[in-house]
Length: 294
Length: 275
Image 1 (cartoon, chains in turn blue, cyan):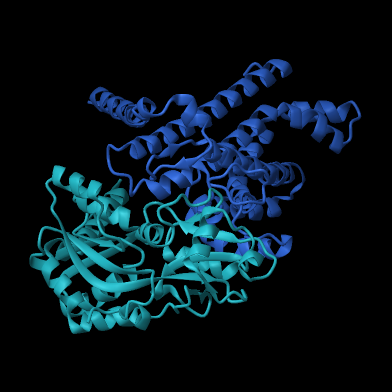
Image 2 (cartoon, each protein chain N blue to C red):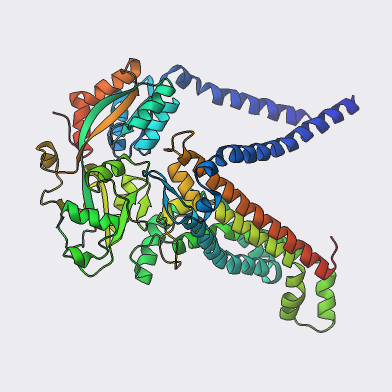
């Protein structure tokens, strides 16, 4: 009786686990099937390195370089915001905060993660963008910088939680040994604890970046929507995600425009894949360096 | 053991009651309207008024742009497609392939107002100047009689019927400059223009408010009167496309929009009723 129940549980959980794999494979396969046909019409390098995105004109232009650079600039800016705040908060919560402060700060940061992205987008568009416009005397407040700011705030909880976990995994023996040989708390923190948790912290940063690169609603509302190659952070840009969101509803199924939007999704997919591979490589390198061998 | 059985029974009962609460709507008639953000205010106010009278009908109204509405009609995911531009030849072909016959219902008239920030001293522009601003030839307000300020050009993406009409009537279908900020709806354009002193944009007459200033086009003010008498150049019809001639609930709704009460709502939304 118990053996049958155990087998049922085993099968059930195996199916559930494989369901996730099925979804991932399904999405990847769909992206490839729907995205690759665009390369019959437009050469791969013309598509990825082309500078004009005019998909609905006759003749259409399918160059996504401005879109890719838009995404990368906004993500880079977001990293500039979320890394200091996220890692800094993690260090504070782990090392310096008292129990009561920890109990207050951690939930507040978790709540930031739970706010829907459209609320961030709305807030950014209505409050932050005009403020930045007035503060920095820009022609318009809907810029890559505003997008980066909102994305940085959105990615901070991810970076903070995972960094904090990484810091707490550093064995007590490391800290005790460092203090025993005479280092003070600051030296222990920066030269022993931080390097030991570096793999976890870099993973958290990469995860934050993946979140930022894939964010759609916020950047759609806040970054301005100009498909030009950005020269500074303070001009409007059009990331890949907002292009797909804005144009997918109208692209006629099966048209080149439709396939090009899937191809953009494919490129986005690869960028996130590259981020994750880099995260894995960094993790391994740090492990070897510190001989943690986990 | 005993407690968890009670908990499960209670949860199951709550779930059943919750699901039962939805049954009435399954039995009711439903209508899905998608498409133009210009026609959206008309569709919304007419839907509300219609549902007040016919409580057994459930109408959902969405935006997204004329292109989205028509694509949706072709895919069969909506009953009525709002559009602020006529259906394109390519779309008619695609519809036929999918067994959909797009039937055009004109529901109102509209003008596309060219809007600027209220602080902008420029009161009027010629169509030629508008075209040059949008295609990139003119980049500074001083070139058209304004202050020495960079022009921030705000436009719509390709899903927009307002864009298509503007493209045809004002731009001769030339490419909009690459650094134009593409927004997703009339409302987003009006918002962006109202917050940006150097901005120029375009939106349906219904979106004129104290937050933005509509400039004269070729000397003609963007008013309903000028749309009706034909002197305002950027004038257009607003459509609701259906699959074949309207029938059933769809017919009842379209008839409502075209009735006196419906056209009153059109006028209230800021558009021009059909005479």
